Length: 123
Image (cartoon, rainbow, N blue to C red; front, side, top):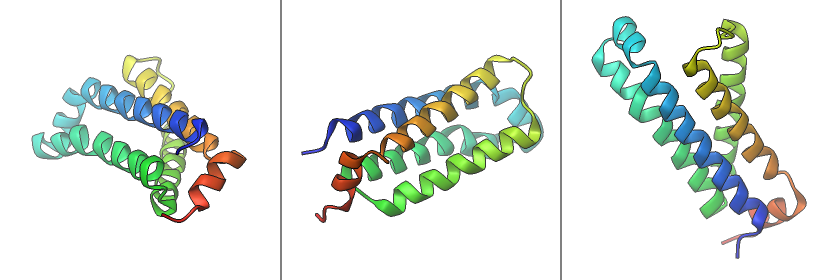
């Protein structure tokens, strides 16, 4: 049985994936103008699906590899957001910031003793 911390981590992670999808939809016109329709479609569908898959792989199967990949992607997103300086107050920025905050909170919850114990349990 999964502890509540893992369940909450999943909820926050999936909410973060949903917010990432909202951000990608809000940035659709800019993505198409810069990258073309195919790449814009790949980002709009692929990024949120990748996040959701890693969250579920971590919280349902207890995969430390997926948790590590999710942490690397989250850290990279924080770095890029800080580097680019997306502090323009737009709806896309708000959705992106909410996504990062939710993902980070979900990952930090996995560092609680009960979640770590569950992640270390084989099978």
